[in-house]
Image (cartoon, rainbow, N blue to C red; front, side, top):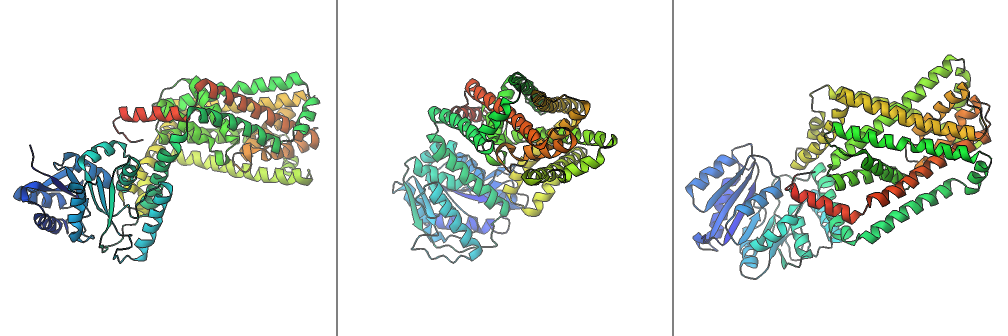
Length: 605
């Protein structure tokens, strides 16, 4: 049985110029506080690529009080500390930053606070009133902002969460460690916050601190990394516990109610009812049936996309997930419903978030490319039949006056920009799939060389790789492309059925113009300028149909309104049925996701 009571861990990454002196100072300080046989100094060397491992090994071989724990791969600051704590022998586990920025005269208070005073956790602080700290603005201002966010959002009582001078009782560490998700710079903040939440005794005491070396504030790490970790922990501790099955079901009901309410705000119910009264109800109902047939195809297409990424799921489940996300897109701005789908497939089927969002990106690119190609083919056909002048006049809005012309012109400009962006995105993806060059690492390397930059770059690389997997697979590319053509052809057939419901004969010219108008309208509503794209779709549709067909402006606008209303109604109805069928509860989904994380033994998303 070991007699070690205190394990002092020194996290080290490329510290060849300072590590030997730091070990000497640590040994000297501890020797003045504790008997030699009761402490150990553990160098937690985190995959260094300099001489730090050699120096640490040499010292450890010469002095029994020193141990060298090596990692072949970068674990991150928090990961290295946790790994070292797990292998340490002491009942009191402590660490401090190897730059010796904190005055070592505080080491006794740090250790004894846990060892003899009964505290579970102890941490030095640079922001208590008693502190004498000379911090430059480039360090002080970000630190104040960060600690204020932690205190406000995570309800911490501490003033300083990132001071590299902490100790913890082994039993408390073993109980808290499984709950800490971060492996980098947020690790000790998460430790302190969750220790307070669990009722552990935490002592914060002032320390004299002097900055050493250049600031390590990093754009990617501190803004994206730390900020996202604060939000993640806030959700975990403050939001998730309040989401019960009842509240999630209520939220689903409210979601549908708000969608219907927004439709009444942007679509005058009386106008819609009046226009529908002039149309054949049976044919309007048939248009809804035609549109409903496109949804199983969406599920099949999404299945093919995920199959090519290595995730094999039933198309029925995926159709329900698409229904739910598209219903969310009718309510939430900036297409936030897409995030709902990524969350559902992550929680229900353990598909990682990067892959979930990559599959959505593939789907969106194919949608935009297909719509653009449909519009382009029809536009070429119209020009070939001598309608080029009329088409140009329609696109510039010179043949339609008033608000409809202005709305339509805006919609056409948006559609053109979206279409060009879609073509550019496809060309870029195809080009990147045929090269071994790592553009992500190159760009991220210019922004930051921190471990968080490596982490972010890894996530982005996974995202890009998933997209490239689909585009590089010829068979998958063909299946998804053909399915996309079928989906958007049914979307156009829905509109043509509404034309027929208003009594218009489906002549070849009307069908061609209808294809072009619906395609441009769908491109226009991609940008979330209005909920569900209401307004832009109708404007683009009307400004194209009215000049190129016998359909007047009022009738064209009415047809566009009814067409869009039918499609939104089918979407909302499908969303209601899917939420009831899949029993989408955030609490259940989070529980399932956490259970899978436990089974996966801590694999990253």
